[in-house]
Amino acid sequence: MTEVSLDRRLAVELVDMKLSFIVNEVEKILSNWHYDVASKFLRDAEQGIIHEAENDAITLVHLLDQQDELTRLKDTWIDESIGQGD
View 1: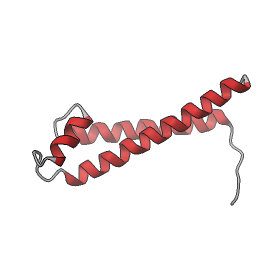
View 2: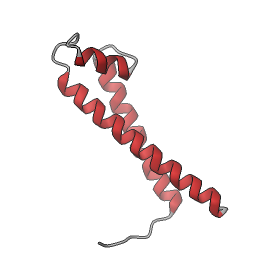
View 3: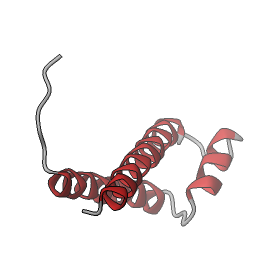
């Protein structure tokens, strides 16, 4: 496996950009179905209240998982940076 050195500030900036993209995509999906809250949309899609929402619900779950993972990664980097006095 090849390792690449990357400045932590640049990595955080890249993660922030990806998080911004994810937030926009989540908002597009919810807006398309006239929802404000992802959990309500997912519950209604699962229960069949919203017809033909399955693909968007799958995409939304994937986006929310990515958002959680990237947020945890960023928080780890920030905690490490604080511990090192950066």
